[in-house]
Image (cartoon, rainbow over all chains, first blue to last red; front, side, top):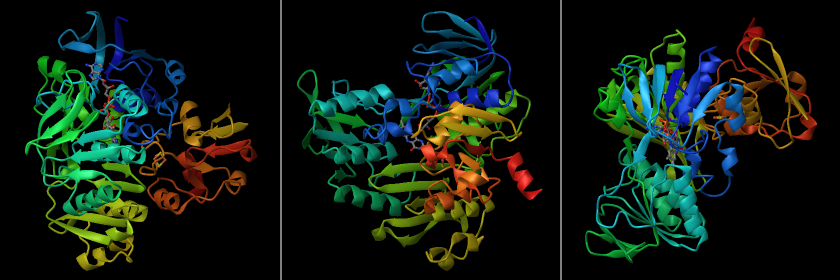
Length: 408
Length: 109
Ligand SMILES: Cc1cc2nc3c(=O)[nH]c(=O)nc-3n(C[C@H](O)[C@H](O)[C@H](O)COP(=O)(O)OP(=O)(O)OC[C@H]3O[C@@H](n4cnc5c(N)ncnc54)[C@H](O)[C@@H]3O)c2cc1C
Ligand code: FES
């Protein structure tokens, strides 16, 4: 292929949705999606949930059936990657040296798993969970009899993986470097709740622990050595300590960005005709007081994709989509609304012991965000409180019998 | 079995489906503008559809969670459902599924 009107780099959530939204907006030009993975776009969240637990087969993960793309005249170049961008010539270079020209470029590359740099981190048996391939390798390990697994990192992905593995009968140790899990995304109440749940389900969950090295037999990992010298035996290790945005080629081409690539309110980078969306894009988030941040969620990837598709079609609206997220662990359904960045107080509604409750995050009395565990009503109604920037009465807020919609 | 999707503009699209197929997946594969962002985890309600009146009562009742989630959808009517929560069964042969939008305008207009 020599050229496409819109070239989308990255065939994940954002890339797929951008192509879909372009066609839905009536875009008739050519669209090419370039993806590093061999698969047509699929959903990533099940990789630490239903797919990992074998409750869903891979064909149910496709964002659209593979035949859909040809019907919509969206061309895919898979199993290759963009290695360079030439913004002046409006073209990208692929791994094999070939080039593809663009009128508009949409960078939707997500991120690559952050690796630990300690000794032994290149041993076999050390995994990340970002792609289908990662997940399949890990599942093959479990099938081959691996039972002792160490999960490093107590973010949502690590916790979800630990929950699934426990259910599959593995002995799981979860190591978190900070004093509590979910430290980057949630408050203490939610973290403590999940820590207890995991321990009750048999996970050996340890916080405040440093990893010194991976031990191995010369080929494969055999254990994880902690800073205090203890070695936890493991035939497999999952490292879930976040991602590094995959923006190297774009930054080299001159795009501005420190943590990912910077975009404006229409998801435009500092390069002409180049947009960036999803996990790799840093933007001033209206729901976090204008703080520049990346948001790693399907919601954000999809809504930014739609914003860009509309902008390309001449229907420009600044990106202002409501942030939400979900996580499934054991039989617990967490739904989060808003972004809690900068909160100064929390109110718990309901009883965590009953395994159905919400944590409301406030700043100077204004509702910023909610984490709702098995509490869909609070999620739905609380979302409206966040959108309205409500300042509810705190004792009413704490009264789980009082529907949140009455506090608007 | 047959499913009839009706777009917001009133266009009808008949598609064949097998019992057991998820309605959201079928709608998406048929090119309907159903985003289904959360893949059926009931966190988004972007899979909202309005079921034809004659068919609505043939569906299994919505769970409380689904009812709650419908509060977030735009253009909700008495026959609104989350398509991600519906698996097709043989007794639904011919079911009419409307995309919200104009349908909503018709309801209130
Ligand atoms: C295990 C797991 C569980 C998750 N659970 C949830 C959840 O419950 N809820 C939620 O909201 N979010 C969840 N997320 C996050 C969510 O999946 C991401 O936010 C979302 O995928 C971001 O979409 P994206 O398009 O930005 O990136 P991605 O979906 O990661 O797609 C980027 C694609 O670009 C490719 N790529 C990278 N560089 C290049 C290049 N140079 N050339 C070509 N292709 C390239 C990558 O290989 C990848 O396929 C989860 C993520 C993971 C990994
Ligand atoms: S797909 Fe999100 S609620 Fe149906």
